[in-house]
Image 1 (cartoon, helix red, strand yellow):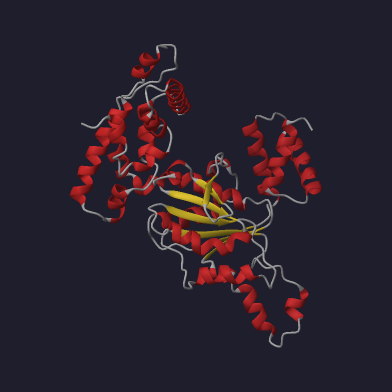
Image 2 (cartoon, helix red, strand yellow):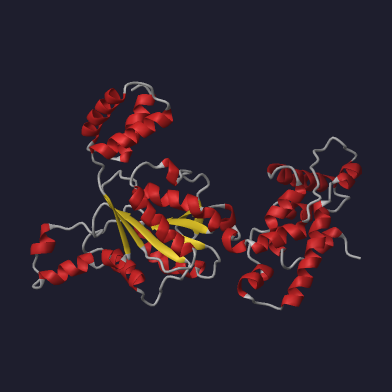
Length: 392
C-alpha cells in the first residue's frame, strides 16, 4: 500500500497543489529521509511556517487551494470536455488523498526528533469533497485562480493580468450626484453580465466629475456576480488581442478599462483600438466589454491643422477623427457640476464626515475653494472636505 507521501505524487487533478504552499512543503517533509535530522528539521519548520502563514489550519489551506486553478474536472464542468465517469472516479480518489493530508499533524516527526516544543498546527475535519462541489456549482460567478481571489487587475509588461491587492473599495452609494449617468453605466454592465446585448462604453467629460470612480464602483457592486476589471494603459493596447485570447474561455466576465484615453491624430494605437472595436480578425469575446474614459469628446487632441490642414478633403480627415468614439455604442457624458449640484455634494460629504458648522458658511468657503481649484466638481468638493478635516 502506498504511503501518504507516495499518494501525493499520484495526484493528477490537483497536481498543481503539490507545487504550492502548504501541500508542497507537506510533500517535501514526507519525502525527507528520517535519518537526516537537519533536513527533517528544515522540512518540518517549512511546513509549519507555510500552514501558520495561511491561518494555522491545514484543512482550511487545502480547501482554499483546491479551487485555485483550472483542471481537467473544472474544464469538464465548464465546457463538457473529458469522460464524466473517469473524471468522477479520479475526483473521489484524489479527495480521499487530500483528506488524509489535511489530518496530518506532524506528531510523528516531533516524536522522532524528540522535541515536543516544535510549533504545531491545527488539522482539519473539512469535508473537502462537499466544499469542492459547492465551488464547482458557483464557478461561473466565482471563477478560479487569481480571478477567484481578486476582482481588479492591471496588465503587466508581459501582457498578463496582475491582481491589485488593495483595490479602491468605493461603492455607488459612496458617490454623490450624477445618478442618471451612473445608472446608464450600471444598467449596461448588468446587461453584459446577464448575457444580453451590451455596448462598449465611453465615459466622456470634464476632469474630476467621477468617470473613473463610477467604473470602479460598478465593478465593486457586481464582483460577486462574476465581473472582473482589468485596467490597461494606452501604451498597452497592442496587447489586447493576446489578452482577449487568454480570457475567451474564462467563465467570468471582464471589463477592460482604459482610463484617461487620449490620442494624437496620427497615433498608431488609435487604429489598433478602432480595429478591435469594429470587429477585425481579433474580435472581442462575448465575455469581454471595453470601457474607456476621456476628457476629449473623440479621444483625440484636435488642432487647427486638423480642420484647416493640407489634406484636400478635410471632411474625410474629420470623419477619421470621430470614427473611434463612434464605435463605442454607449457614450455617457459627465459635465462639470453646477452650483446646485456642487452644493449638494459638499453638504453630503460634510455630513458623512461629521463636520459641524453653518451650511452657508461652509458653502461660501467651498465656492471660494472651487474658484482657486479650477471649478466645481466632485473631486474639488472631496479635496475641500479633506482640507477642512485636516484643519487647513
